[in-house]
Image 1 (cartoon, rainbow, N blue to C red):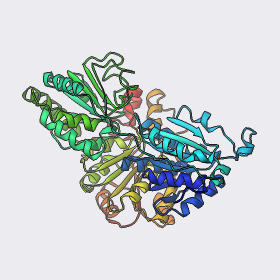
Image 2 (image 1 turned 90 degrees about the vertical axis):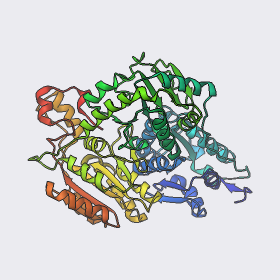
Image 3 (image 1 turned 180 degrees about the vertical axis):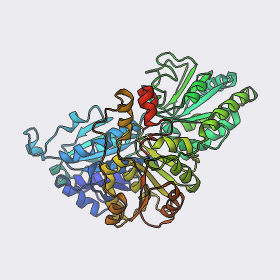
Length: 564
């Protein structure tokens, strides 16, 4: 497209295209009509119309997670932007690069408190990595190109761009800026040598692998490093697919709950390698492993953001670099000390295998969701994509589904409800040939389940499994532990989810008894189109580690009772 007299909207679209953005999620608004028209003329970018800005934003987050590229979401001013704030927060918490573009009131009325006017630079300054309002059409391309860099540099995250509606429509002769994502950071050779020496001397090392290990190349390098150096690996919250869960070196998933037996044995480690993770409070068991501010073990922290390393933990060896080039550089080092670590690996494997052993219970108030997890684990395709909402039900998934490094998991590290269904729609659009399974609670489905309409409109085919226990289960667990028997505001009145699915045009199925689990899960996964399975789950069996009666009687602390 010629830059001669290009509109601001056309400059936006062209810059996104040159940056490799091929899909944008939106809810249409009058504040960016010119932008909608510009997308009409650009077949290289798929503009997906969603049913709620929160769903659109979460689809952009999921799409970015799966592609490793910048996600994009376009929303209108005021209410539209407010609805999308959930996704901005998720992108920030989960370190996902997403550009949120907001249509603003026209420049003439800025500062007058015009209809739906909000100061977005001020509003999002604590959530986004960078916020800007573009008031000159000649700078649209420049700032969009910078947004791509800002979203991908150091710790990835959200960027918010506000554009007055008349800027979209006004013409400019400014050239299109070259938008390029930030490049991966390689380690210094001296740091790689120091890393090799520390690993060689250790007898009980562990790797805590985070989101920067998600790319396929990083997963392959992590497996090679673990095998050649005999170092066991644990995945941080919602990154369970970075390492094959059936491997002898697999420790487990370090999320909202770490079983006490595993937490105890981890303290015996003599070296912690934080790899591709910010080492936040969930992945460090509330800053207890590694202990903040002074770890009990030497800590090696590998992350591409110097501002993260050393912020909360004293770090013996800080390496400001991405995970994959560090692991690749370790191939040039001679592995040493492997035999000293065999007993440690065997000890960890014994604890892991004992914890993964599970026999579902027969409950009076519904199906033990562990049955669903075990059945799903047997039937997931080798390249399945699993999207997870927040809720107690995910405890069974993390504990009892053995994920492969060829599969993908998309969950909200920050614990936001509502991600699973939009993420599954985005995943199905991105990978229509792969099996897409969403796991969501009844609370989470009622927040964003309306995006099933987007699935029907776009041909997406997610299989959505709803853990329906009639409760906001995480909060109910907190209530029962802190104020036994004083239940308020956590009971839910739900529709017939299977019937609701059929009203959208999807297949609706129901599981009410343990005997139905196997056949219905098989039927759901074999369907060609979108499916919703309403699973009447036990509230008493609140998660994989606790029952409500136990919480009431023992006064279990908040830290040990909740999964999200």
